[in-house]
Image (tube, rainbow, N blue to C red; front, side, top):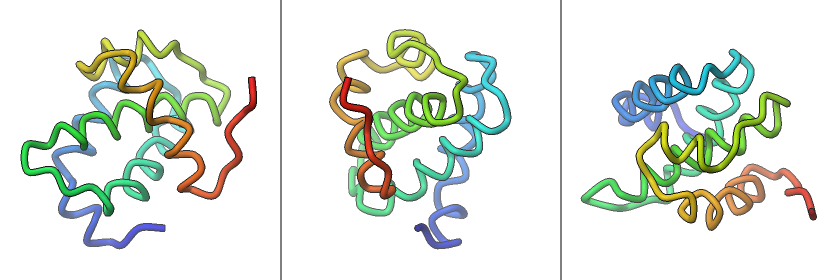
Amino acid sequence: MYRARDQVENEAWLAELQQAADRLELETGARSRAADLFLTTISDVDDPEDRSKRAVAAASLYAGSLIEGDQRSQQAVADAVGVARLTIQQRWKTILEKAGLQPPSW
């Protein structure tokens, strides 16, 4: 769970997440889930250069699209957000676990 303050403090990142979702043409459910995952995870991130926030945004978009059945490839999400595919690969399962969800075992 996240606090309302997290949402206010990360307005710019949420807007960037929505812009990437636009580029990916994600449905509303996937966008909402990605924003929730981002806000749930971001409260633990302390990165003055915001590289970690960009990585969390990308991994949240990927995980949100998987959960909602609006799947996009890791590479497509990485291109939309401006990170390496490996960044998503290394973070998305942890984001699911942090949100109390069970990542797939495939």
